[in-house]
Image: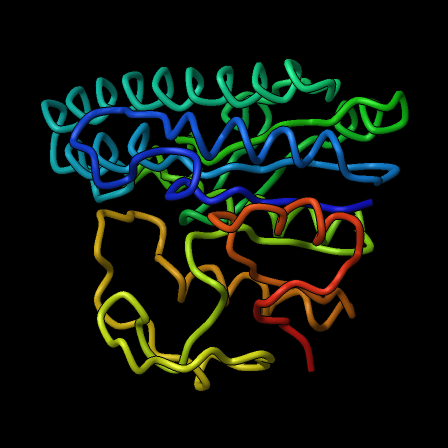
Length: 263
């Protein structure tokens, strides 16, 4: 089994101030998924411009100040949940159009967090979908939180990837982003940034300033989640989904320029 994470910056126009699909990328990527050879696959995707601006605007996950603030956050929760669900529907439909038997899974319907970390999740149906040959499509979402001081939290696709990997023990984890992998410094800010082919600790990287709104931690957050899988002997790779053929090659086990997270 493989878990493939599609970054929100790849499938949406993340810099946009309103939800905007990157149709060109999404069409190509979902075609490559369909053309690849794999027995079992889970696709997790980020929220991009469908989720981050709304979550930030309504400060979801911040401490609740009073009843008025709670109502405001509840409105933001509802709007964000609707927006990311819409994105998930589009991603799932693109996969179906190219022959992948995708099935949409809404995180806020089966995941509860506490202090913004996954506390419980029932994976029974996901396991059954995999057994039948479906490709579950899960995504970054807003969920209820057991901490009464916040009540709601933003749940990143990266944290979902880590949780699924811990419970389902995939053969491989692939993160498809908008850069070739992890650099010694932010490649979007420093032209002389050097790609790091192997990462085993956060100290090896400097993510620098993020260029877009990201309420889930940016590249540093991704690496932190993946490093947590090393104790389970699950290695991960980060590749550039903006380059044609990379997704298909990676899913087929072929060498792709990128960064491997391993000991």
